[in-house]
Amino acid sequence: MNQPQTYDAIILGGGAAGLMCAAVAGQRGARVLLVDHAPEVGRKILISGGGRCNFTNVGAAAERYLSANPHFAKSALGRYRPADFIELVDRYGIGWHEKTLGQLFCDGSARQIVAMLLEECAAGGVSYALGQAVEAVAHADGRFRVDVGGRAFAAPALVLATGGPSIPKLGATDFAYGVARQFGLKIVQPRPALVPLTLPGEEALFRELSGVAADVVARAGGAAFREAALFTHRGLSGPAILQISSYWQPGEAIAVDFLPDAAPGWLLAAKRERPRAALRSALAEMLPQRLADVLAERLGIGELHGAKDAALQAAERRLGDWAFRPNGTEGFAKAEVTVGGIATDGLSQRTMEAKRVPGLYCIGEAVDVTGWLGGYNFQWAWASGFAAGEAIAERLAE
Image 1 (cartoon, rainbow, N blue to C red):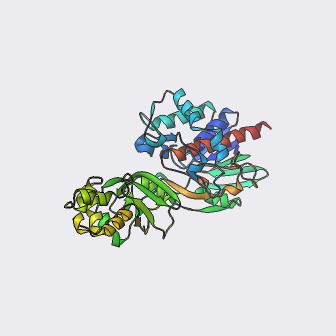
Image 2 (image 1 turned 135 degrees about the vertical axis):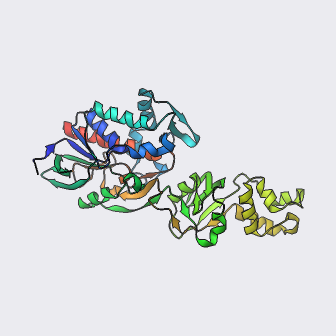
Image 3 (image 1 turned 120 degrees about the horizontal axis):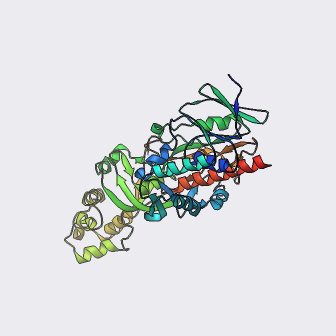
């Protein structure tokens, strides 16, 4: 193989974090090569938010991220905030709007975000090696060597930005973990996150509600989220369930409050006011009819006047704390992100650089930092990419 072509930094992964890192380092004087096995960059960006890219969340803060070290993300998130990315979006004249819970989306297409990032990379003179897989990564004499498609490249800085294994149909793999292990970094066991949950056979009655949604509070692992839950032919989905899936552990139950706005004692009050009403009718005033029917059937209560007060109180408690015991998730194929990844205890929280391998940086979803649903993971990508890009340029200037 020919003598390696040299750069100041080689970035593996052309997603959100890799593009941000490349742009920042390039614009600060580093000669950057961005490598991706896909023929085009930003594929996950393009499908996000229904094609409109939920590019950040105004509420992004470290406590809304999962990590073995809950403090790790504070530094990067504090130095590159949602307002900083919004300023970049505004500079390019990209229209955006805020949906619920601080989620920001493009008015037009997610392609605008990818085009913006490519313009930023162009301003930094970033080079590309796309559409071919990495064949080997090595490190010697202070330089990293990367073999791609029969060509060799070398640089004193290498950035792992290839993400986690979620959404493999877009080409996602666990490549970053293998390279990290090669250099002695530990991996926190990865698992699917922001993913639908599956229900066992005995919950078939609920699976028959496929397509029915309701506003609920879902709880698991000490966390609680109020958003919509959606019944599917395999189990449970919808924003509330996707959120809680990141906290759920196999074998555990999740609790669902089907009536978060109901006043205490509402069922006894309904019995006094309309004793001839059926429970299913009372529930249908607050829930979709099909769901009301199934819940009433499970509770075994017909007309309210025929039920004892104690039974109605028990039914009310259960409706506010209904236990489901999922038998799994729909896996990485349907997971939006990955919980776990490259352990943060081996990384600098300021620069994203490996503590024991100078010049090796890990950013984005490849790292054990996972945000809530709604733009948080993109904000981590921008923030961690910015931190590493700055650090690479600072190192170069020394």
